[in-house]
Image 1: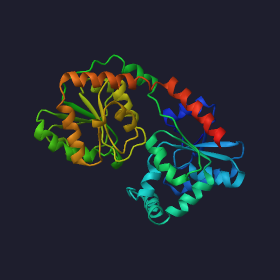
Image 2 (image 1 turned 90 degrees about the horizontal axis):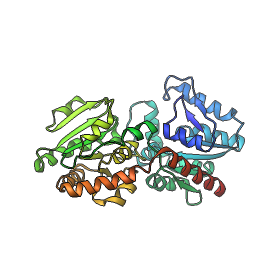
Image 3 (image 1 turned 90 degrees about the vertical axis):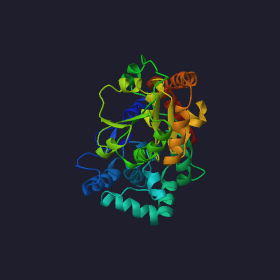
Image 4 (image 1 turned 135 degrees about the vertical axis):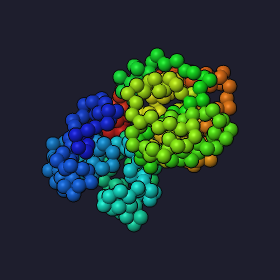
Amino acid sequence: MLHLGDDVHPAHRGFAEAINADFVSCVRHASSPHHPLAFAEEFWNGTRISDYDLFVTEGARPLYAGLINKFVHGTKLVYLCAEHRLYEILEGEVEIQSLYTALKSIIGTYGTPAVKTIFRRGIDGVMAVSDLMAGYVREIVGPSTPIRVAHPFIKNEFYDDLEPIEYSPDSNVVTTVARPARYKGIDLLIDAWESVRETHPDAELQIIGDGHPSTYDSVPGVSVRGYVEDLATAYAESGLYIQPSRIDAFPVASLEAMCAGIPTLVTSGTGTKSVVSDIEDQLVADMNPSAIADRISWFLDQDPGKRSTLSEEFYAVGRTFDPQTRKRFFATEFENLVADI
């Protein structure tokens, strides 16, 4: 598995272990992936790594090295489509924070045909973590490139901790867990909250995660809790979990909420919408404050009996995202993908 830096996402590490893949970092020495040294190292490593017949790239960034390796050495290339970065480039939604992100924005605006041509020639197959990701990457790699879908899992320690939670069907606490990134859509949720409070003045929103603006705390009914050591306790206080993302491949935080038996609301730009809609399609909202407020209010209007039923259904589905089950499924689908290449 070709990855960036020293860290690999826990679910992706599990996927790699399930197929007995080695871990190969395409960048190890640069202080930041945006540093010019990082790009130089990626290109250099892409030309010199020649010990493998097939690479799986963890996300979009290692694709640079992977594509170079393919064109130099003829290595087969599988793209693990597990994040939103290519989507943002092609949709022109890059948040410009550095020279690197500015370059990505320019590529999205003017270079999309070239990007698609390169990827269609270079990517032999795709493992996508959700139907949402498979749908958008299909537009990039074209109709003939095989794509398989395998969902991530909840880490063992979280999976076990979430088992004993007792759901409170009378709770009007809404919880979200997210980093302070635009794609996570917390600003959309904040903009929606005033409308929610107009019809449900006792509703409370707790935002978990470091780095969110302190101004959110001044919104009536909103508390920014920052980093929380015991996430299970925070879920136990919740009547509803919400993932208000603009685009999110398959956020594990929403899986954790389901695994705890917390009814979960997501946007149409969230990969776990395929799981949520199978339980209750009223808990999938369009990606705007009005729609998000409407769906939250719909849930808060439900009686404890309906909420308890939803809790049981989400719990049953959430418990299927254990590591062993999902790693076995990934290995099977990966074998099928390789057979199709």
